[in-house]
Length: 317
Image 1 (cartoon, rainbow, N blue to C red):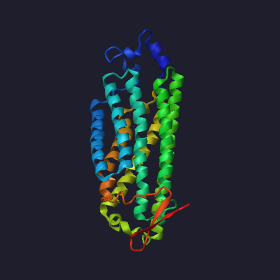
Image 2 (cartoon, rainbow, N blue to C red; image 1 turned 180 degrees about the vertical axis):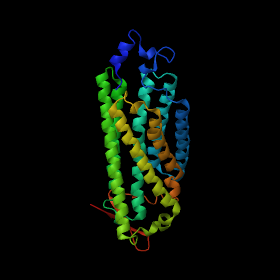
Image 3 (tube, rainbow, N blue to C red; image 1 turned 135 degrees about the horizontal axis):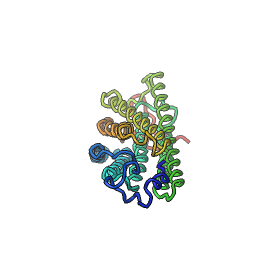
Image 4 (cartoon, rainbow, N blue to C red; image 1 turned 120 degrees about the horizontal axis):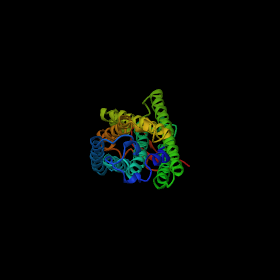
């Protein structure tokens, strides 16, 4: 964490909030580097363009939950990088620093929510008989996991943002670390269950697959979506693992003050995830059947007969 006491000893009588790059040494700033203006503006442009495309595609294909998660995440990413742009001009003031810390920490939780929503639809396309659980079970479980991770990060960020003492600020950061750690654990469990579903599908063959979605399932576009979704998930996992390590070591650590590492493991990882989920948008890759792949009832399954026509709904008690 930033050592407020050492700063005060080095610069007694001067409020660091009043410092500028012309009047104070960079060692007293919130970061030991000046955030790149060009690099952070690029990230803002990427997320802004992706946001516009996702809103258009989401409305066009009615992918409401997916659109909401991605849009929320990208808006917060834009605010976070705007904070870093402000830090380019003055890295000493605390508000822009806390804005970028809090926003860039919590934003990917919204993106993972969108990713979690996709798994249930994928299971319906390939056939629910290959799944250990109902599609709704995956969605409800991981959205709850994601909400808990987001709650911890938001509470921790709020405490850190409003803290008047270093100890309270550290408490907020530690809560944020707990939220990030929970997010990492959730992603790992999610990946394991995805691999389990893929293994069961290959093991038992595609003979009992949902025939109603044969065209979609066999298309190169849909298979590309599966690869893109997997890659986006891994990118978010790498990013979240990095942030756990970064925050755990403190704001004055070498890791927290390495701009190149931050740009690659934070900015690039999240950007690549968003780009993949934009290029291979589920509305496009499900070829207009995103709504048809819905599991409809939270408590039931849609059974499919041999001809691929949905039969009566079986409500599981």
